[in-house]
Length: 436
Image (cartoon, rainbow, N blue to C red):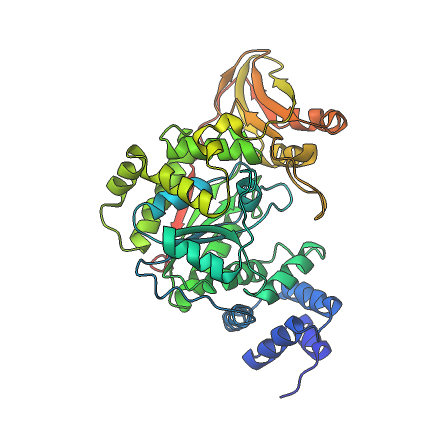
């Protein structure tokens, strides 16, 4: 059957339901360049306002999944399990998590992204390791995974190319916060990896894409449903992103903290979340005695050795893992100090993340160059008691004018009051196929 982009846009604009055949045609034509960006932007806006039925979402995800290559790791005997986070400030969990799980005999074909807005990106963090190459062709991706049971790379151009085009378009057309478009974007890439299991970390709170728990829950349930419908066992955790994860924000800073976790010396929240996710991934991978295996992998050094080995395979310099003082540090340092005595009652992830990006740790424009040595060390978090003059954060920066413009903005992230606030739960909810 012949379609036109205009008739499908009008149908969705008016609240109609697109057929599977129509969606297949649209995604195929857009990938081939026969549907213009401005037409797909109109379709994305129609979906933003009118949503998708479960049948439409399934068809949309499948069409994006099959718009390019689907990877086949069937020759690797271990079960393949990946993890995806919707993004947050200080969210470096993937970096210690992946080698820890791989050290316990589950293969982890981890495909990650770059920073977006105020959130950091796993690929940008890994590239603060000198020489570390994250852009791999499918053959090299498979070679590293086969040899090490772990690979840490970006999405190749041949994998879900429709998603790559649509993702960039949504970013500049105000259609990013659409649950169907977010879910299909994430899941089309993950399903193209040929996984046996998938763990999802859906952030909620001030520093998250989804700031309200109900929307975070809807997104988690939607993605779990997509995964299960494609035969991939999927578990989602909703986790708090009111304040940064851990103490470090910025690319080299977060690599240091990730290595601390692999040495058994990381901050409590990052360690707790890493272990919770790792145990769930081992369950998905069919590994028994998960918590015991994970402790052994850290105590024996096997998890850190796995990270060193895969760093070498990606072309990275292992010396900076063995001695993290060799990682980049920007030349200038400043301190944000507490204005008076009291308890920290606000440590706003969004403000800290956006300020860190603007002083050079992220991109305001897609062509901006990241300074891996820029970062913020968060020294006081929710519930901490501070005295006037105590450091709330230590900042490393290179550009004086950028820092001058962001000093006040960063300082506004903290509120200090006479009375303490109760601690926030790190894990808000767990969702899998049995919960809905």
